Length: 134
Image (cartoon, rainbow, N blue to C red; front, side, top):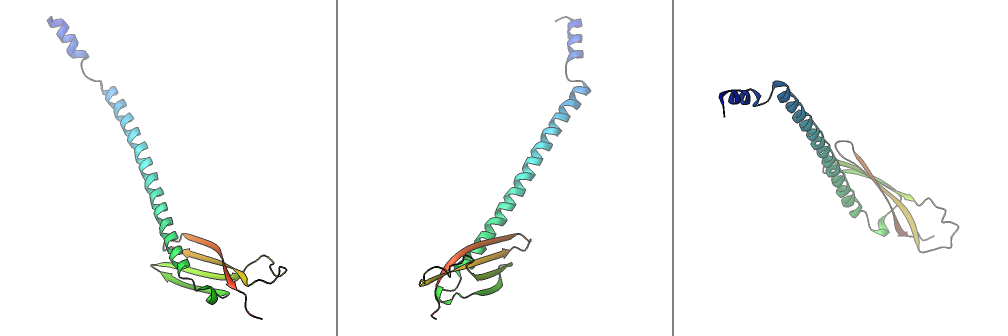
C-alpha cells in the first residue's frame, strides 16, 4: 500500500462518537427490556408460590375436618403456620326438605385461608352427614 492509501485507511478505521452512542443506546434499551421481563417473571413466580402455600394450608385444614358424625353446623377459626383460617359449616342452600327422607343430608363447608401478606383463598365443598334422628 502506498502512504496515501494507508493514511486514508487510518482515517476511516474505527467508529465515530455518534456510532458508539447509538450502539450504547441500543444496548441500554435491550437491557431495560430484559430487566422488565425478569421483574415480571419474578413477581409471577412469587404469586404462584404464595398461591401454592395457600392451597397447601387449605388442604391441611380440610383434611382435619371432623368426621361425618361429628360435623355440625357452625363456625371454627384458628391459625396454622402464620395463616389465619375460618371454617363455616352451613345447611346446604338448595331446598332438600321437599325431597323424600334420606339417610344423608348435605352440608356446605366453606374454608377461608388468609396469608400473612393478606392474600385470601376460599374453598367451597359439600359434605354428607347422617340425618339427625327425629
